[in-house]
Image (cartoon, rainbow, N blue to C red):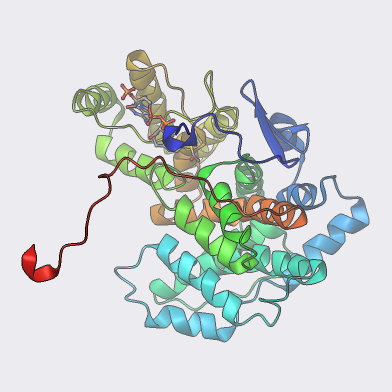
Length: 371
Ligand code: ACO
């Protein structure tokens, strides 16, 4: 048996959902560049779940199902009020709330295809409301009910702020959701598949995946990028800051990737959005600082920015609290997790690898008073 640290290069499953080949990302064969420019997030959800783009009436139906299912059970809102609110990270709140949602769904343990599809809709719909409602409750604000006339991205921004978002904000947020929706066998998706391959339920799979996404080496990096930009403070400090961090052997969040070598194809879209949105807000310093950080970092290490680097200044420009950046990643990525969970159920085998044992050889038990 040979072991591979971090399972690098190991092919653990077949999948027809998304692929990364020669630094090109596709969802069901559609290039991410094409989808980012043309598709709505709801079209992408349909694509990932049905492996084809929806027709008009199918898209209308999906949008209706999502907005019909966005409202949260009152018990979840009450539960938020019992959290130690000033200490809880929104990702921990989200992980707990998604697990709780399973308690209030009569179909939780029903593993039929129909029940799993209903759960998929409910999870995708309610995850947006969990994030926005938690954000409001912790500020002492009343939750905002979803609106049937708004699409998914617009509803999220509306429920978060209580104000109808501008068209440019909806477009940018929708594109960010499209870009984050799926990404082959990343750590959180693999976690979801491992969990449901035991034939555990969809709520368990998504809860496990949220836990994996939370870490700073994965989805948690976007919040850390904003923390770094805030610490740098102004453009002229960028180079010295990066040099010092690298000299101390610290990682710079938002750079590097296990699979991409030349670059993450999603980053260029987010870089452009960051440029436009920071200009619109009169806060170009975040974009300019990011550009300087990228130049300073890549001059030292040949590791291009990943999806998390420019998404930080994009979300900041949309007025979103920094600790909600990773929960927003989950709001999008749940579409991919669900697609992978359904694919796993459709052709399941328990995922159970081996470990290369490197501990002591055979030992004889010594009674406690003789040790
Ligand atoms: N900053 C500084 N050095 C880095 C970085 C970085 N961001 N990323 C990798 N390196 C260096 C490592 O120090 C290591 O150097 P060494 O060989 O001299 O020890 C080498 O590059 C390989 O790095 P690993 O961490 O072994 O690469 P791995 O494939 O395991 O990790 C990862 C990929 C986790 C993304 C890594 O690049 C990283 O930690 N990046 C920062 C966190 C981040 O941005 N995560 C988001 C990734 S995208 C996503 O999940 C949505």
